[in-house]
Image (cartoon, rainbow, N blue to C red):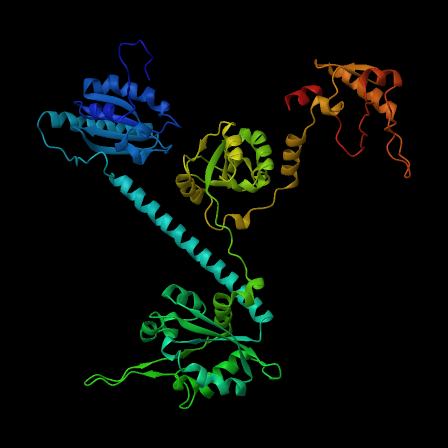
Length: 562
């Protein structure tokens, strides 16, 4: 970009809608470098563009840089880091290029300049002008590919959620069936509400069952579908059932095995009681189910219509689900709560050389770091996973590394102080919002990514601990101690030479007999400040005991830096 004060500016700067509209109405071929504010324009191409402008383009070629953040017609390019070049003629887009390929850009500009000259001479060209807001052919291909990837991600996520739900509900049902084995359930349809007590009065006792509780419920299709999670909804509740069930309240009966009854399988007992030996609808000729069928009065010319009156869970899993839904007090202690939804999150990217600054914050907020990895670039759409941990990265051969890898973090937004702490480190990139963050993290960390992640290795933990817990000069010499005399040496806030420090350490070590093995029945030897000093200083100052297994005191320069 030309410096201020020069007569000719290489690229026109465009930052808002008004400036954009003025730009695209200019005469000639307009080549626009579209960029996002966070990453800036493609500076590496400016020398090449200047050469083309001077040697080929002249007044026919207009170069510009446009910040997509403030231009509504370029909103689809916001938050992108890939260099984007739009070719415009007479207010229409005539070509598009992505990337920083100098030979390709030179070739395209040369070709479009020839076409522009032909167009100005009144000759026809093979151009297909498009609105600036339309997707170019390459964008359409990219969009379709991205949509395909997103669709696959969504389908995988849906399968994962469905699998986890099945596992959780299966476990929950097994727990209920194990702990509540003697409770069963029966659904009485509205059409049988006036008849079921009479029909069941004697047969319950014969079956070895007792009525424990009755619950009236207004059903809807959502509840019925939930009830049939472990069964086929259409088979259990066909259309002719729904008309009656949804019209008014139904009754659920909680049945229990009688005290003296010898029943091993309550499901089998209830199915036999309701349907007879067939154990499924419509049941035997003289069974309870047939006794509760409601027959509408015959209307002249119309067929007789029957309404079902009772339903029994076909499997133990459906019984457990029904108990959970309609008699929660019986099963509440065996419920497995739904998992918390994934918190809103963003992607945060740092250069590799900032890992020593990033790790302490990761260590400080471990529950907010959802995923991490080392990638080839910060561009989620065009990146490659290098390693999932620092240990993996350091084990790679040099041929497989660029040594400019990017540390990418998926960070929860639950704690603003965590986000703020990372922002203070000046990352290469942070997602502008949670919507973009979710999409970017899905590309960086697809389904199954965390399944293969290793736990933090010892080297990485040591690095975090050293960075996070490195003692300051004051901590090594006693917290809150400044300008005090310890072992006859005056310690002040000024930097002391390494030679003097080593001498001080030697004297302190000699005073505490560090080289001698301590006796088992004695604690660490504590040396008090002389009484004369105590009178001046107040409370006695006690040196902390020095442990043989701890690392030696770091040099003052490192302490100060920490």
